Image (cartoon, rainbow, N blue to C red; front, side, top):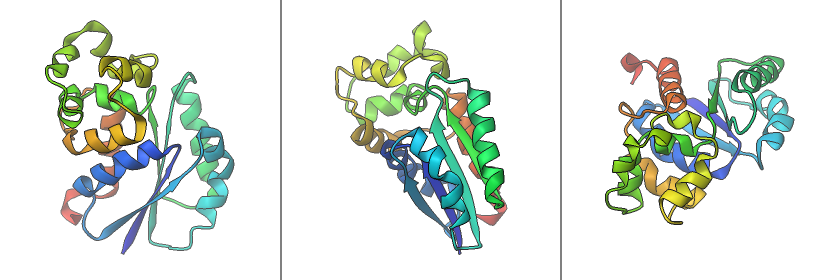
Length: 188
């Protein structure tokens, strides 16, 4: 059995992936989650965690938020750390700006997950049209939902409703297509 090992910056990413991955991964692939205490902790322990992973039939995902950093610099730094492990394949994905950008890419999922009527109408507003460019999407989502969105519980509630094909967040789509490339449909 192949292991899909997800090294994540935060618990809310695990809450999202725990619901989304079963919709993407073949049944013969078992996801495992290693959650760190923020991006600095992830980067500090990344090499050691991957090097010490014992199952040879493993594929790795490293995912973290861009936050206020330059996306290409973050991705290159993570790729450099991944090369140090000597293991592959490793998929590196950055949530631009934050994981909540994924949710702005599908506000109808937020509407359904948090039981808020007419929220999806906000998707046409100029500041929400390009989810990966929202400066502080977690704060913005809390405001838009009048405090109903909370990081972990919100991720659990929204994730079952996320469309894997109609999301307007480019970083969410890059995550989904990257995983699908590791596990092509003919192997599913």
